[in-house]
Length: 152
Image (cartoon, rainbow, N blue to C red; front, side, top):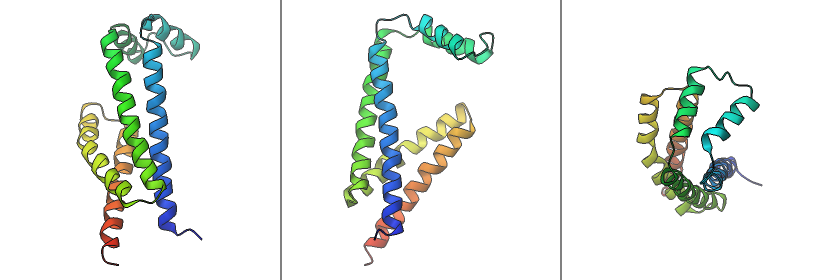
């Protein structure tokens, strides 16, 4: 029978796998849209999703998307795949309940916490704060687990 610690590791692994899948989808989408009219495509989705085209946020979004250059889109795709690979490695190590997976997750997740804090400072949102709390909780749990394993 699985212990609750095993279930928590598996739950964290699934979270990492979901993040990886989302980043792979973003990377594929970025490369598929390389030589397309992104402004027109974004306008189509704004209309299809029935967003208010006069909304300040929609206007800002359309302006940013319209001004993206192919080099920026390539970088977005490459960085997405890089992070997806890291999250996939973390998730695999955790799923297999390997100590290296726990360490890798602590190191990578901890190193990204300052970026998350900076993003919350720049553009605060409840989702960003919740993700920061979740990632911080994961780091604390794994450190506690790693330190506890050395005492056995």
